[in-house]
Length: 125
Image 1 (cartoon, rainbow, N blue to C red):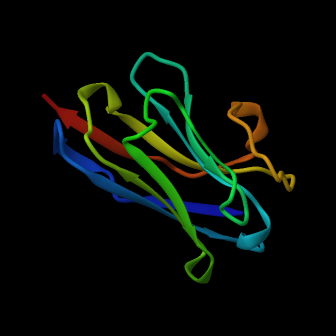
Image 2 (spheres, rainbow, N blue to C red; image 1 turned 90 degrees about the vertical axis):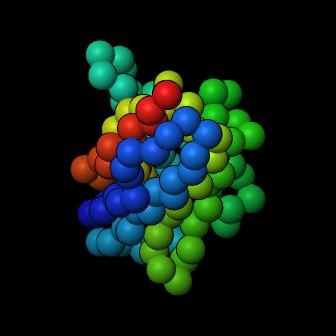
């Protein structure tokens, strides 16, 4: 399984970015997808996850109402639309997917076996 993330960059506080992650190597539509992030000196933290049909979505409290996760099965791609960005959103963002088929994916690092290379998001104040 390969996960190729893109879309990171430098943005001012209050701005927006959209991250994309294209998956390959297995049937995209059969597995949940998610995003984690890691800021310098901190542990990786959960951001958002979406199940195969898109009817089960979870967000970290810190991004709820500002970030939106979605997926396009035709493009084998998961997206993270990030609005109203804050300096504390600065981190490397990782696209993830589990080995198993979860109908209700969770927020633990240990649940996700495959990780993309990460894309840097920097929010200036």
